[in-house]
Image 1: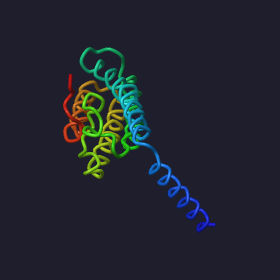
Image 2: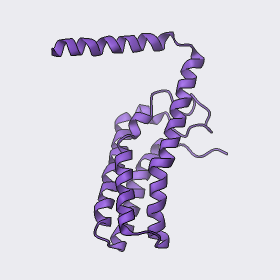
Image 3: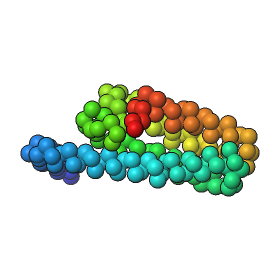
Length: 164
């Protein structure tokens, strides 16, 4: 059974390669643009929105520690999905720099990119645990660590500057 399953997987992979090699350049470009649009939408809704709620608690005292914990858990769950949103070829240079800030370095150092996303998973999970204690000072310290090591660990090496 294992051999049959592996043969089926191999056949699907070969078919996928054959399909993409016969697709026209405009079709491939449209697929890349759709992937970039999906990535941007995901990052805004599933990472940035909960982060803004967390930041609002730390900076302005809005919400509660329980809200921070819930939003940190959302970020941790979402961060594990980030690598799948970066198919090869969807970087600056292949697409307009206003469309994507993803640098080619992501694919040149895929293991480093994956490690950076794993750090965000870990640091946001730590924030959720700390937020469960209700200690506002400890929450603020971990938000700083999550921002520096989690968000910054990916954005600094793998994300280009915003273009107007």
